[in-house]
Image 1 (tube, rainbow, N blue to C red):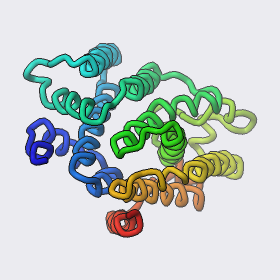
Image 2 (cartoon, rainbow, N blue to C red):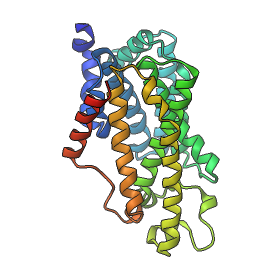
Image 3 (cartoon, helix red, strand yellow):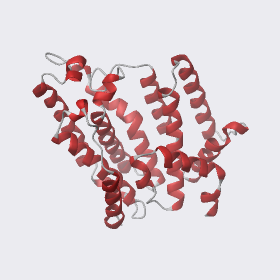
Image 4 (tube, helix red, strand yellow):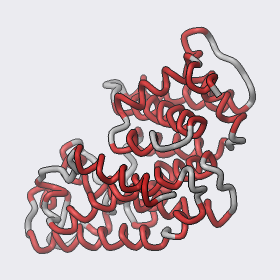
Length: 288
């Protein structure tokens, strides 16, 4: 067991998660040692993939780096080793893939979502949006529930739905910030008549803008409702983490529903540190 705590590769991933995971870090800490460590590794992998796309000022360089990262990820699942400068992340990934019999498909899907962002692909329809959410979030959910001990088709389907709920919440929280960056994840088919990217950014007409945000809030809430059965399927020792994460995101969605304009005009929907701690503590009590 101590190997999972003291291995330098795992410590490297844990430190990345501690510094950058935000809403997820406190929830992850509720897990048993092996599952917690595995989640740190998965987060570190996702963080590096995100940074290759989001932090690079050069699209061509980002494309090259993402391709290399995808090849390295594929090599992990083929049992290959890596040079000294890459050893921590890939050593840890190799270990958790073996320990939890992880499959490459969800990781491939996550990278497809990164490629979508890198290509600045337009989301034209609701189906486009759902497909993007499945790539960047449902895939993560499927990896998580496998690490937590669920491998049934039903659990994977419910994880897909919970991932849709989480990612729609993220998108609704950040509509204004994304518009400022030249991105819009709400479907282009919804931006017609009096609505366009520019009028949405200006929150005009306010009634029409609010109706759009509230419509997608309802869709997100429907996915939380549809995935409720997942909580009971997760083993008791891992269930508090899922409950904590879901509680945080549902309350963020509630803030947006109560004041739709904040999704564009701010302030950004968020929970205080004290509120997050209280939700995590409650999840630890009721989830077992």
